[in-house]
View 1 (cartoon, helix red, strand yellow):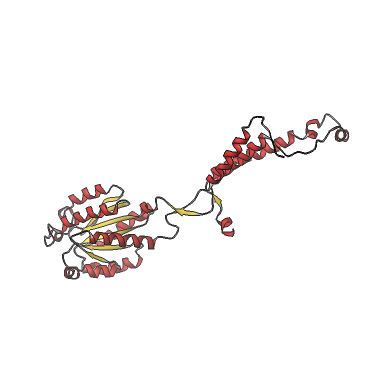
View 2 (view 1 turned 90 degrees about the horizontal axis):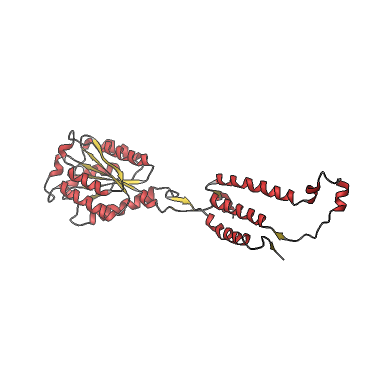
Length: 312
């Protein structure tokens, strides 16, 4: 009971102002039903008390009183009484996924058939097919990082954009992974939403490791790496493992089936849940609907023929 009163509040408290007319009307009714008030000024007060016949008090509910009660209940229902939180039906859709793709010339290598870049495009299709919901965005980087598509529900646009991505479109070769990660974080903070980051790359420059280590210490968003490489040996040789260790991120190697994507989605879901506060994705439940039966009952009684209900 203590917890109930600590949590109890109204979601729309401004509606309680509608109770002010109720108090005014109730006071007016009381005055009009007082016989002393009706004859006040017409008969001397010391004579009035002897002239008035005070009928035996009966428990009579007048339609006006019942209407006021319905008014009070209706006002409280519209004000939205609430005392507990429930999961939001939109909480699952709030979690976003920012995808970072490195577009250096090596991404065109054909040691993964038909090429590393083509395989990445296939994997994006599998990713969105299996994910089936939630917002996603795309960033391309090499010597600089660029937002290709901000967070959106329409992942088909991201697939179309990925089809057009080529290393020749980038201003310069290089590795600006730290800059790309910061750009991804800006997308989440700008929308005030939870999410995770997926880096798709075939290499991480040694010069990036120091910055990635510092970034990993304060990074609020879970991230992981999909290595667009044919073997574990190249993951180590191309610096992907060292970069992942600096970030504290797991590395998934390309597979011929959907195993890699399923693993990525499973890890992303668990990490977003773990990094989200308990109250994130929850909302206060509106308890006004509990008053509806009483409002309907009062309205039915008030509309009875005779305009007066006697309670024996």
